[in-house]
Image (cartoon, rainbow, N blue to C red; front, side, top):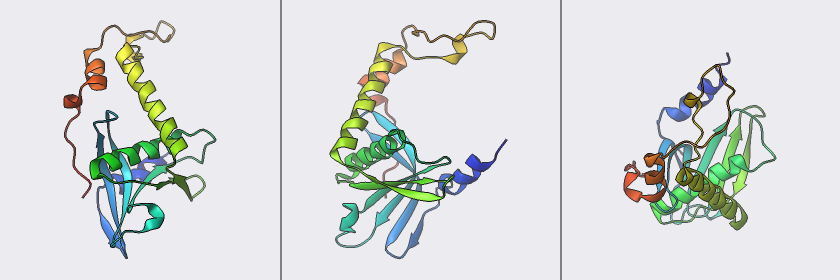
Length: 178
């Protein structure tokens, strides 16, 4: 097996922050949005210092996602960065206008513009995921034995899914972006 994913995320997952010139690099930052019912951990948050912060990047918060592959035609990776931006915006009462994805396979950083179209696509993906959780149609591989074909099926009532999708109190408190 390839150790690439481990090496790629080793530095990011370390949580070690650093300062270079006017930018602070925070790794493994915990994110939360009560509005969108999201919690997660982002790879890297670049925070521009200054008064005002770098206006090319909005208010100075710049999410960066690390991927081992190469850029995709689909918006999956960009939607992930936008979801991170939505969390940062809610947590810091700010606007994030840009992020980036660093692709290991091509050794290139791709800019992600957090525009209205990407925001609409991201919120639609979040709403779709919440609808699946609320419906109870959550696929669970442990329901299938090795002797039967794996078929997608609706899982009977899963109270945790309904709680997650409908109640702010289920989302644990997370560290803030400092």
